[in-house]
Amino acid sequence: MKICVIGTGYVGLVGAAIFSDWGNTIVGVDIDSEKIERIKKGEMPIYEPGLSEIVLKNISEGRLSFTTSLSEGMRDAEIVFVCVGTPQSETGDADLTAVWKVAEEIGRNLETYKVIVLKSTVPVGTNEKVKKLIKDNLRFNTEFDVVSNPEFLREGYSVEDMKNPDRTVIGSDSPKALSIMKSLYAHLGKPIVEADFKSAEMIKYASNAFLASKISFINEMAQICERSGADVSVVAKGMGLDSRVGPKFLNAGIGYGGSCFPKDVAALYKTSTDQAYDFKLLRGVMEVNELQKNYFVSKIVRYFGGNLSGKTFGVLGLAFKENTDDIRESVAIEVVRILRGLGAYLKVFDPQAMYNSKKVLGEVDIKYCLDKYEAIEDTDALIILTEWKEFGTIDLERVKNSLKSHVIFDGRNILDRKKVEEARFTYFAIGKRTNGTELLSKRPTGTPGVILKNGD
Ligand SMILES: NC(=O)c1ccc[n+]([C@@H]2O[C@H](COP(=O)([O-])OP(=O)(O)OC[C@H]3O[C@@H](n4cnc5c(N)ncnc54)[C@H](O)[C@@H]3O)[C@@H](O)[C@H]2O)c1
Image (cartoon, rainbow, N blue to C red; front, top):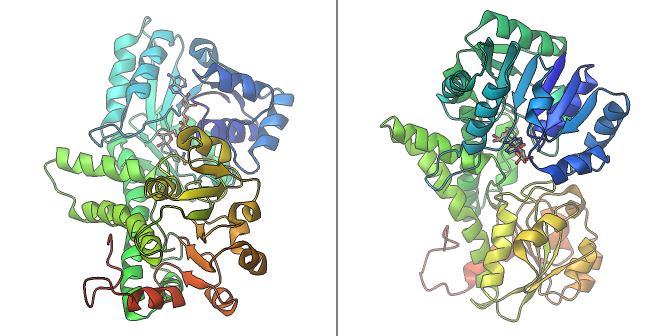
């Protein structure tokens, strides 16, 4: 099949690579000429495990090419995928500027029948509007169909996820377009959910909002576990083994971030209010997530007696999650900003997100280090903010020799509590009573009986 993919970011570039690897001929289109030039030279503009090899292989075998010209990219295509960004707008809903722009341009350039597929995450009603917009911009009386095909990949695992999705959702009002889309995905042998436009659009938001709810749920459980003496990791394990619950998205931490969950939860909430409905549960999910990072920072502040000025911290992790260089809406970045604002000096390290982080954080009161051990050298505490596997296996003896005071704040519960405490560190994790928690509970807090209040 001949396919055009518009937008070569985390979704579009991976999609273009995988579709070409299935034997299709793909042209990737992006308005960012620097990005296109880099990809053409074989340089990946994003870090995604396994992506580079697939892109290079398919470029060299002639199935994958890139251009900045949308008209050229879509000319011979039977299917045109729209994978442009839909970030959060100031009012909380999705900013669809790029989607409208692309729809108009597709309309102006449509000369033969094509299936136009919205893969970008868009609010309910968008596919119908895109269909109208394309129609309004047609220069010829060309037939076309619009299809909603939301993407569910996880950054850091997107190659794997695109090759092996749990399901494919196809929202369509045309049997012809549905059959073309099925022929693209049928070989995967995975369930295909056929839907109307609105249900397909809603499935994406409902899925992300549900996963975000799981995270906020376990983060609230963490609060009760910490207060009562239960261990949230053990609780999550016990819950997750129940097939009705499942183990994923049950890791307590400093909250969810990234380019999807925060904006998608906010957009769904906005959709609910637009429909004159107050989605109370989602409000709670967002509020808990907002408080979670403050709660973590409050532990650090209280440990150091309320004053961080003059303190230096070794910070491991800046990406919003492991296995990615993406720092969009990263809670780690927010925590770094808060700590810096409170007067601390930060020595930071992330295996992939250093370049992106430097662009948004600048260099004031931050040192970007070459590895995890350089980051903790001669600092007052180790602070872990992203769950990269390599942080979980850090050599505790080396940490001990590097830190001025033997204290660790683990915002992702990535270290083995027993080993850390045996190595005689003061340890603060999320949702478990550690020697650190007990230490704080013994300090005068000003409010008798209130220990580590959320957001305190
Ligand atoms: N990143 C994820 O994990 C993920 C997962 C599932 C769904 N999604 C959704 O997929 C969409 C894309 O997300 P992303 O993370 O790949 O975004 P991204 O920002 O990485 O990529 C978007 C790309 O679109 C390009 N673009 C913007 N306007 C354009 C135009 N007019 N013509 C051509 N190219 C244009 C940008 O230059 C950029 O390269 C969003 O709606 C997102 O919510 C993302």
